[in-house]
Amino acid sequence: MARPRVLIDTDPGVDDAIAILLALASPEVEVVGVVAVAGNAPLAQTALNARRIVALARRHDVVVAAGCAESLSDHVVEASVVHGRDGLGDLEWGEPDVPLDPRDGVDFTAEMIHAGPLTIVAIGPLTNLAVLLERHPGIDREVEHLVIMGGASFEGNVTPAAEFNIWADPEAARRVFAAQWRITLMPLDLTHQASLNDDDLAYFASLDTLVGARVAAMLEPYAQFHLAWHGRRDVFMHDAMAVYEVLDDAAILKCGARVSVETGGVHSRGATFIDRRRVHTDSDVRVGVSVDNERFRQLLRARLATYRD
Ligand code: BDR
Ligand code: CA
Image (cartoon, rainbow, N blue to C red):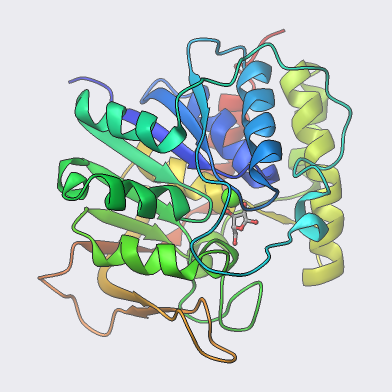
């Protein structure tokens, strides 16, 4: 059977970087492109960061394109406290030798959908996908699978109600969840079960490779953020859960649900209402419920160890 073709829609972001490196090191999938969106940093920065990560992986065959710079929801997004001012922990990087593709990222995504069965892994705000729906009505039904990291059943991380990717563009998220794709959602309730600890950081540093050193260095300020905000240095691997789902669909336990998004509200803007009170036979959305973090950590360690200088 052919490997799933995967396009990653992303706003790198430290945990996006880990997710991308995991995907690029995994033989189960063929990554056909990485498309940036504004989120953890402005678009010019997230596009640069996507090029940095693909160059670090030495995957010059993978297209990197830039999508939308502005969210469809009118507000300012700021995430430097989590990911650093540059989105990747403010390390020194040289100019990446992976170019930015001249195609618009949303148009490139449409091209990839038309070229054959495509799985989209969306690990940033959903702006690019909402614009894709607007430009190409009905294209949602052509997509094989859409795996999203976003939302929360019980508690957000930007506000008590809202998770970052949805909060950053609730209007886009509303449109994406109202469309007809086969969606698998990895909300915070699931991704908070997936973390790396200081032993993992030490392990990556000990690999003595460029990838190992960069990963350890990017994760250090991310661990300091987690200590300050969550009381522990263990770092959440939100976005890698969306990739993990595509690598092994048995790894994450899921249930059926209906998802709606709060686009207004004084305190609840960007909240997701994940209705899993019963299994909805008419729902195309499945939601991640639990994951074996030990198994995930071992897989991530093994895959990142395959990168050689
Ligand atoms: C999500 O927000 C971003 O900061 C992370 O990269 C992840 O996609 C977690 O809420
Ligand atoms: Ca992200």
